[in-house]
Image 1 (cartoon, rainbow over the protein chains, first blue to last red):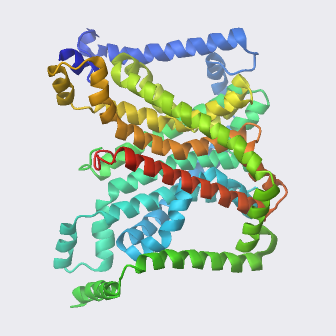
Image 2: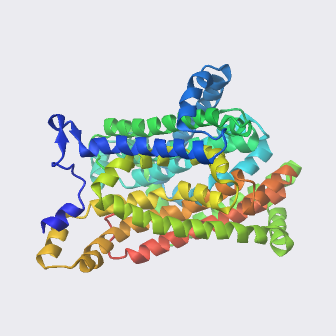
Image 3: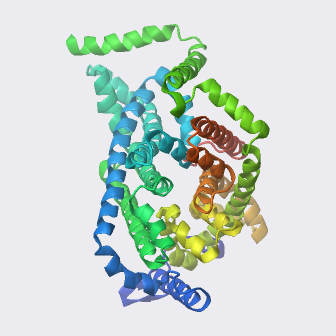
Amino acid sequence: MATYSSRIDAAPSARWRWGGGLITRERVAPVVAGAVLLVIWEAWVRTQLPDFVARPSGIVMAIPFTITTREFWSDVGATLGAILQGVTIGSVAGILIGVAMGRMRELNWFLSTYIRALYALPLVALVPIVILWVGYQPAARLIIVVISVFLPVAVTTADGTRAISKDYLDVGKMFGARTHNVWFGIALPSATPYIVAGIELGFARGITNAIAVEVLASVNGMGMSVFTKSNELNENASLVYVLCLAIFAVGVRSLMIRFRHWLAPWYHR
Amino acid sequence: MTTAGGAESFETRLARFRIVNAWWIRPACYALSIVLLLCAWQALGNSFGVLFVPFTTTMSRLWDMLQSGPLLPGLVVSGKLYGVTLAINIVLGVTVGLLLARIKLIAAAFEPYIYTLYATPTISLVPFVSVMFGFEFGSRVLVSVLISIFPILIGVTEGARSIPRQHLDVAAIFGSTEGQLWRDVIVPYVTPYAMSGIKQSIALSMVGTLVAEFFLNPDGVAAVLLQGTTIVDSGWVLAVTIFIAAIAVVLVGVGELIERYLVRWRHTAVG
C-alpha cells in the first residue's frame, strides 16, 4: 500500500535534509541538473563544433558588450513596445466583443464561424497576407500581435460571460440593473479568471508571432536581431537576445499568474 | 421608473425577438454571417484590385493550384513533417510526462527548465538549432516538436499527479499487480488529461510544422505561401491561406471528436 502511494506524489521528500529543511533534495536537484546541462553544452561545443557556435561561457562574455549597444535597446523598445501596444488593443477589443458574444446568443452565432476558424488557424500563416497588404512595415507586426491577443481573449471572455450563475442575474434584475450593468457589472467581473487566462495565452502567442513577423518582414526588433546576429556568425550575441526574450516571456507568465490571484482570489486552478 | 424601465425595454425587446426564435434562428445567423462576409469580400475585392482579389477569383486560383500547382506536392512534404511531429509528441510526451510524475527527483531537477523552455518563444531558437543541427529534416522535426510537445507532457504529468490516493490504495488493498494498476487505475485516469493535451498538440503541431518550414530554408506549404508574397500575388496567398485554414479547422474538429469519444464517460474532470 505504501509503495503505491509514494510512487506518484508531488510532496517533497522528508528523508534527505540539511540546514533545518531549507536545503532539501528537491531544491538542490534543479541546480545540479542545470549545472550538468551547462557543462555538457560547453564541452560538446568546445570539442565537437566550430568556434562560433554559442556556448554558455561565450554567452556570459557577450552579455556586457551586447546590452551596452544602442542597437540592443532600440530593438528591445521596438519589440516589447509593439507587443505591449498590441496586447492592450487586442485585450480591450477582445473583452468588448467577447462580452457582447457571451450575452447575446445571436451575435455569438453570427461571429463564431470566423472567430473559431481564425482561432484554429496557425496565425503564422496569416503573416504573408498581412505583409502583402501593409508592406514590410512595423505595422504588420502590430496587426499580427493584436490578432494573436484578440482571438483567445474574445473566446475566453465569451465563454466566461456566458457561464455566469442565474442567481447573480436574478439579484441584478431585482435591483433594477440595466443592460450595461449586467454586462460590465455582473458578467465581466465573474468572467475575470477566464479573461486573464485568455490574455496570458494571447501574450505568449503575441510574443512568438511578433518575432515571426520581424523575421519574415525584415522589421527591426529583437527577433530580427536573433537571426541577423546568427547570420553574422555572432552566435553568442544572438543567444543573449534569446535569453532576454525568454526572461521577458517567463516574467510575463508569472506576472499574469499573480495578476489572476490578485484579481480573482476566489478562483483556484 | 427610468432605470428599471430601461433595463426592461431592452430585455423584453430581446425576449420578444426570441419568441420567434424557432430552430431556424441559429442556422440563419450562421448563414447570414457567411453570406455577408462573402459579399463584402467580393465587393471589396472588385474595388481594391491587385492587393485583394475577389472571392470567386481566389476560389478559382485555389482550384487551379490544386489541379496543377505546387500546392499538393507541398502538402505532402508538410504532411510528412506534421505526422512525424505529432507521433513524436504523443509517444515522447506521454512517456516523459509519466516519468516526471513518477520519479520525483527527475521532476524536481528538470521541471524549471521544461517550463522555461515552454515559455521561451521557440522561433527565437531556430538559428541556434540550425547552427547545431543543420537545416535538414531532423532540425525541422526538432523545432516543430519543441513548439508542440508541451501541452501533452505537462497535461500527462499533472494528470498522473492528481490521481487520488484512495484509488491507489484501493488497488493496493485488492492486491493489484503493477500491470493491473496501470491498466485499471493510471491509464484510465490519465487518459482525459492526455487527450486534452493531444487535442492542443494537434493544433500546435501545425504551428510547429509551419514555423519549421518558414524559418529553416522554406519548404512545403509554407514555401508555397512565401512564393506568393515574393511575386506579390494576393490571389495566390489568399488561396493558400484559405487552404491552410480549412485544414486547420478539420484537424481541430478531428481532435475534438477523438477527445469526446475517448473521454465520453467523463464530462467534467478536465477543463
